[in-house]
Image (cartoon, rainbow, N blue to C red; front, side, top):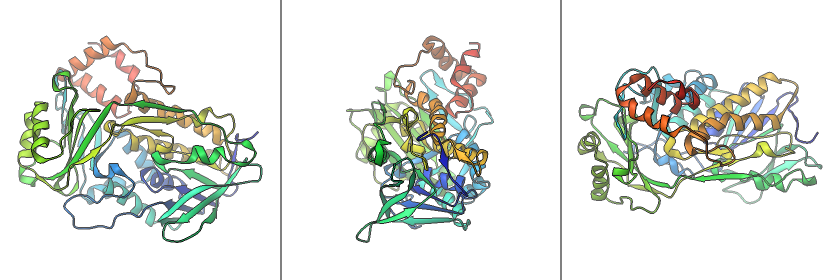
Length: 439
């Protein structure tokens, strides 16, 4: 039946649309499973430079922000690129325990700084992409073509199979085609895939259901430099939104090169700082002396970057009755999450790992591509629910709010509860298991 299978034959050539985190992870998943893998990235990666702030990549607004990889994401990275942790640390990132090495403030107080056994990393996006690209550069099967924009899909006459892509080189006139046994859409939030599959011959494509949940928040970010001798004894400080602080919140993360990234959040429509005085006043209004003390010893190394109201978006490809063979979609192309929750890279890594699992299970056979999209949707559900408080159709989740409130009130005085809440945040345990805790 149409869309039920993806025939890869000898796994000869795969094309990945997009060279961001999702695309690079997908390339690691496919590198040993295809004779050739081509990444088509619309923009060019920034060159290494001795700039005070991490380099910014065009087309990726979040590249100006610090990035925190959840523990479940780190575990997926381990399987996709063994040795990535050592390489990341060698380039300046430092691992830390999410409870013992972090100062986390809930409305009821600070979490106890006790060892949780949950290890994570914070760094710039540029550093993480650099590590992933260096790993790919050691593989003869991988080719990265920067400055190439995909403008459509190639397909069989019936439209039942995707056979490649139409692309345009940004510095050249005209279009070209690139044949592939598998096309992976990892082009992110700006993905054109719904349109591309809708115009396939034979009416194979259909209108894709799109679920959007607005977060109602906006934020600013800025990079600082802190001398090692002046650095605090934690790697991360986060302040949850509270009514007393007008639902404002903030976070600071230690990154490579003695740089620290600060993110400040406020409800959409509220004023956000645009200069040094307003930035420091915003932090003072959060009522956290440790954050103020840290920034009193810090030197700004970037402008203040503003970002508009954030949202979460789920493309329900898994609900289509027909899906063209030779095509899969992963990462933000399928499930885009509010950056505040730090779950996007983890969702992308777990999706890439799922794709590798499917290829291994079906080597030389017909891979159920629509089944992959269905399982990916199920895999994304936990991160989606954490970020939105809704199910994958946008309905509010039924939760025991009273019991959850008690857990958050208890966490500052209970390492067990604090560690359990952090394990859920890092996708290491299902949220429903929190109800097993006695409070």
